[in-house]
Image 1 (cartoon, rainbow, N blue to C red):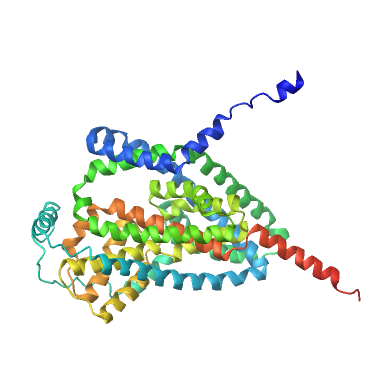
Image 2 (cartoon, rainbow, N blue to C red; image 1 turned 135 degrees about the vertical axis):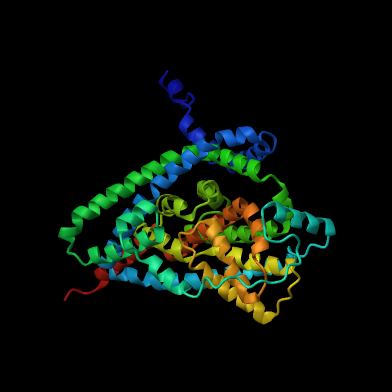
Length: 453
C-alpha cells in the first residue's frame, strides 16, 4: 500500500504551470499578434481597455525609484568599504566606448546597405508627402529647400550640466528625474561609505529591506505582463494603423535588424559568462524582454535586470546593483541607433550624398548626443536628431512627422537594445558567484600554504 501511494502521481502545481505558460516566448508572440489584430479590427474596444494597461504600467513604475535609491546607495556603501571594487568603474568606461562604436557601426552599416530612404516608386513618395501634410507639417512634398534650425543649442552643454544636479532631491524624486536621483544616490553612497560601519549599519539594513520588498513587488507584477502587452499593442495599432508602418517599413527594418543584432550579441555574452546554453539563456531572459516591450522604458526595466543577473544567473549582487543603474545612464544604445539610422534615412530621402567625413561626423555626433539622453522621453530623444541634421544641413522638421508616427515601434527597439546591452555589459564585468567562490578558496589555500612565522 505504501509503495503504491509513493508511486502515485504528484500533485499538479498550477502556479508552476501558469508561470511557464505566461513566461513562454510563444505566449509573448501570441499576445503581440492578438494585439495587432484587435487594434486593426476592433479599435474601439482597444481604446476602451487601454486604461487597464496604463494602470499596470503605473504599478510597474511605482517601485522603480525606491528600487534604484536603495540598491545604488547600498552598493556604493559596500564598494567604498571594499577598495577592490573600484576596478569595475574603469571597465564601465571601456564599455561605453565599445558600445557607442558598435551602435554607430551596426546601424550605419544596415542603413548604407539597405538604403531605406531611397524611395524610387513615385506613388510611395506621394503617399509620404500626403501623410506629412495630414500631420500638420510645414511642407507638402519631399523636395523642400533647407532651412537652418533655430540656434537652440548654443548653451546646450551648460543646460545639460545644470540638469544633472538637483537643487532639491525631494523634488527630483517626486518628478521622477532619474539622472538627478542617481547622482544624489552616488554621492550619498560615497559619503555613507566613509562613515564607520557601526554608525551606518541601521541605514544599511533599512535599505536592504526596501530593496527586498521592491523585489517581491516586481515578482508579483510579472504575472500581468502578457495581458498588458496585448492591451498596449492593441491600443497602439488602433491609434496609428498600419499605413505609417508600411511607409516607414525600410527604416523600421533597419532599426529592427540593429536591435536584433544587439539582442543576439547580448544573449551570447550572457550565455558565455553564465555557462548556459544559448536557448536556456533566451528562456531565462524572456521575462526581461516582456517588461521592456511592455513598458518601453529602460529605467522601469532595471529591477528586472538586477533580479535576472543576481537571483537567476548568480552574479555578484553588490556589483550588479551598482553597475546596472550606472550603465543604464551611460550605455545609450537605443538613442545611438536612432540618431545614426535616422539621419542617414533623412539624407537618403532628400538625395543628399554623404562623403566619408560626413559619415564620420554622423557617427561621432550621434554617439556623443546619445550620452545626453538619460531620463528623456522618446519624443524628446527624437527631437534632438535635429542637432545632427543641422551639422549636415539637411531638413528635419518635415520628416519629424514620419518618425512620430512610428514612435511606438522605434521606442520599443530602442528600449530592447539598451536593456539587453546593459544586462550583457554587467554580466561581462561583474564576477559570478562561481568566480567569487573560487577566488575565496584560492586565497584561503594561499594563506594555508604560507609558512608560519
